[in-house]
Length: 294
Ligand SMILES: C[S@@+](CC[C@H](N)C(=O)[O-])C[C@H]1O[C@@H](n2cnc3c(N)ncnc32)[C@H](O)[C@@H]1O
Image 1: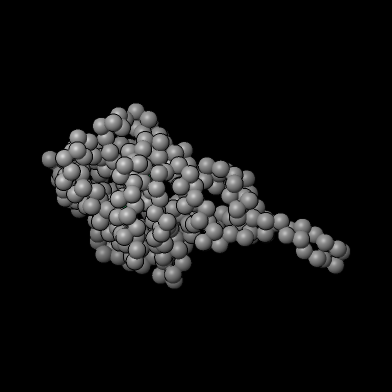
Image 2: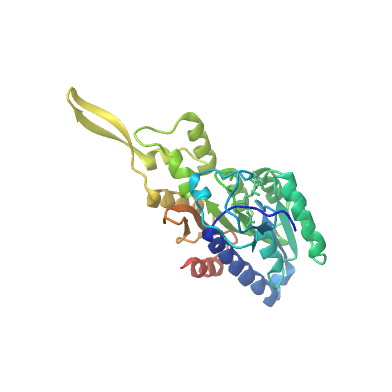
């Protein structure tokens, strides 16, 4: 049997089911509409994994970044996002699967045999590097795409999101690492250390999060008044900030991202959607809003 990934819990099923629904709606629209048939539709899975997920909980073989992930619910042996996309009917015209891990990329290669009639490209590369180049060099007069970004943590650079938005031809599904990473890097009682700050700057593409998430408060001490840095941000503040960042570059953004919760109802990620094409954005966000509503 193919190598399986051991990652995620029932929130993973929620995420992938939403993605599957959107991909189906998307390809149906393109298949039905004569004008839309002019475009080559592309599905890009830039953190593609192996194509499979397994029943087991995360193991030491996996880059389990936080204890929430290790505590995630056991799950059935299931399809990963790449395989789900390949099974969507009507199909996309092209599939691009990007995966940095060589052994996972080798597993993805096997999908080419199984889905031999499909146009599949496997790219063993860093997702940010690939996407920024691919967005810049593709002829967007002839192509339309859905990009799925499903990182473990804060791997997605803001520059990549900007490149995607700039095409005005891509619909983006993105897992924002709200609880697994961002909230944890936002230390209480003081601003994040330089390494954390750099990671947050790189992901948000701005330093404005510092003002949005922290304030200076005056406290009375035995010796008089003292100023202290306080973290004001909660999950809602962080969500709002990130959605506004997406709105600053995309034509339209779903304002109801889906929180993906662990077994104790702590949000691990937010499943976000943004539409890039001015003509298609209204209907795209309408469909995404519906899919994101529990
Ligand atoms: C959460 S898993 C993806 C799961 C997959 N979407 C699925 O449904 O089966 C994240 C994947 O991204 C890969 N990865 C991590 N950092 C990456 C990067 N910078 N570029 C490309 N792939 C990366 C990891 O090796 C891992 O397979």
